[in-house]
Length: 112
Length: 114
Image 1 (cartoon, each protein chain N blue to C red):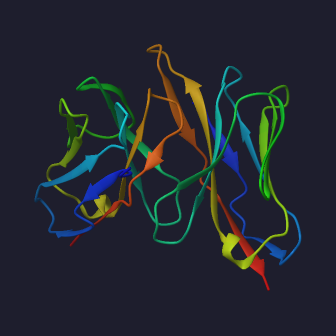
Image 2: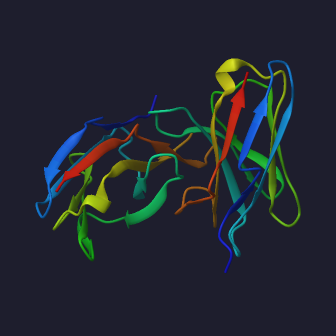
């Protein structure tokens, strides 16, 4: 049983560029949550997708957008990258919104 | 603003001793509580879930929940150097849009000294 997968593992971009991160949930899960984790901090909730819709959103600007596909996989898009967007981006899947969440390995984004 | 608070540490514990990690939360209606372990540079790994008052044991780990006092703790018995990591507490919290959302603490860094 494959767990949560994310791609790519690492990514280097420059300011102003756009990036797309991808996530495939654990088998049987229908909900995907995205988090940003800066060094030394806890995960910061970006948004959550369920039934192909954004169900909840954290305190992130509209530059952060996402999508969920019929197979429950999800994408996170970030436009007009800033240096401060450099972080570990985590995807977590669950059955339902606030049940046990299982994380993928993360994507390390560096913005130069 | 609903919050989850943890002591950032580092908490240093001798090998073989009991490590005690604490977490307090502000939302009185929270129903689900989770402990995650995160090694440096890795993603969080779920180690314990607890939903009812009292203790829940799983191997060397015991989670304790006290809803009246709004705290949840994690005890690690016979601590090993491999337990050195950051431990994150997460609590589900009811939101105004009628959905629950996991609220995360910033984590406690645990160091087990051989």
